[in-house]
Amino acid sequence: MIYLFQKQKPLKTWIAVILGALMVLLVVGVLFFWLVYQKPHPDYEAMPAEHALSAGELYTAFITNEEAAHQQYIGSVVQIEGALSQVEQPRDLVIVGFYFDEGIFGQAGVRCTMLEHYQQQALQLVPGQGVIIRGLVTGFTGSDVILDHCVIEWAADQPPDDTQS
Image (cartoon, rainbow, N blue to C red; front, side, top):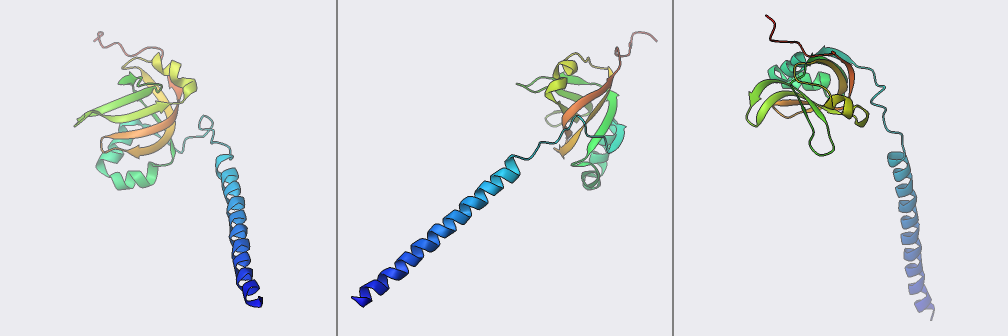
């Protein structure tokens, strides 16, 4: 009989260890959820620009030396200016484009995905209109520099009139 009780005691110990480990994992999971998913989102609209340059200069930086431009600009907020090339509206997004070259898959340049608060204002812009946009540089596709969370800082009243010479 003593032998039977000795065999059951290690089984109870293992169950206690497993339940203890599950409780620790549960506590760690709750803390992870709380710290990661409950933290405040960055206010991209209020973030100041770390770099100010023309859209052409930003595009040229990535085309001529992608590695150096990646180090300098990816993950930073930039303010770009230039003459707007196109405004696109795929699904629920509004993308403002500054194009400087013809790539394999179409026009190549800088694409700026607008914050929701600025989408209607961006849809009012017309090609050729001067604009200043601030946004977070998130990547380079090999043909396009991608800016996300963009805001319109300034827009010219009207595009330049090319008919007057």
